[in-house]
Amino acid sequence: MSAVLKGAHRDIANLQLRREFIVAFAEGPDSNVFTPAWSKYRAPVAEVINEEFEAESASLHDLLRLVRNAAAGVDVQLHARAWIDAEAKRFADLHEAFRAIEIEEGR
Image (tube, rainbow, N blue to C red; front, side, top):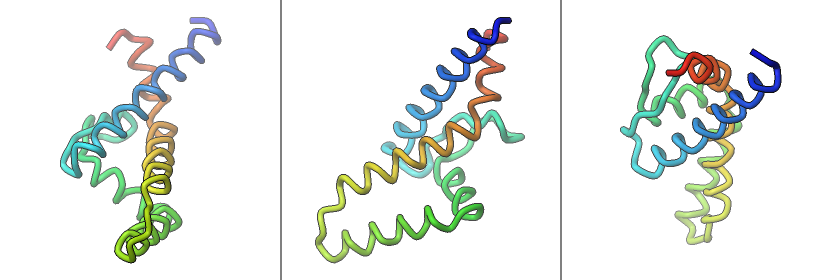
C-alpha cells in the first residue's frame, strides 16, 4: 500500500476517533469509545480520561480549574470546549495508528 494511502488512513482514523470521543463525552462518562491501542476494544470515556490523568496531571489541573471557575460563576464554555477538544486530540493521537491498520484491513 502506498505511503500516501497509509497517511490518508491515519488522517481518517484520527478524525473518526476525535469525533467519537467528543460524541461519547457529550453522552456521558459511561459512553464507550473505540480503544484499538488497548487490549480491550472499547472503553468508557471516563476510563479513557482517567488513564490520561494518571499519565499527565496537566490535563487534570486544567479540568479542576474549569470546575473551580464554573463554581465561581465564571462562563467557562469556551475553555471547556477547548479542554474536550484537547482530550479528543490526545485520545485520537494515541489510537490512530491501530485504527488506521483496521481501516486498511477493511474492518
